[in-house]
Image (cartoon, rainbow, N blue to C red; front, side, top):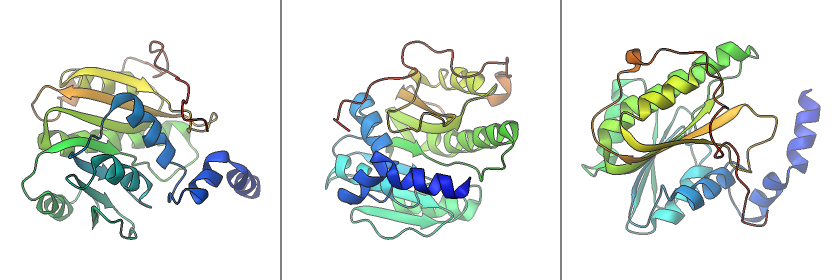
Length: 232
């Protein structure tokens, strides 16, 4: 299985394209496609990139924010420098890591919170789903108090029963919340991206008020999938 995955990964068009275009990860194209549609990162914007290793999303965010912008990334793993970005190594659940991220922001409000955080895969689908939701709530708990009104949140999650209530909770803090999957996501992957736009203010939602109702996370409207328009 591992050998087959390596072969498929090497043949993957986004993997080959990332090498040609000097992106650190095929995941860069997921953010490129999502940002093209939702305009999460704009020129001059301040971006918080959670789970940033190996730096592919930070590369895209730096390009989109431009020289007047700021990108602050955080990850458990070390990340090679990206010009225009500041990286903090640490566990976002730890207060000292959170304080280091706030220091890197230097008092600037955040325009976009991006989270590509994912748990170590156990192979047990239910367990991996729950762990991904925990990381999604962590991203919102930390990021929303820093997010400016009108700002956006993008979170990667694994589909499952807790996804619907998560989306409902975010709707108490954002004018628009969409579930989607960019073309660069592998078809067999259960990952789903939740994009919340036009932050209306306030901190993290009251998660306890939104109990799982058995939603699968893929019963949304026509935004579930959308075509890639960059010619890949």
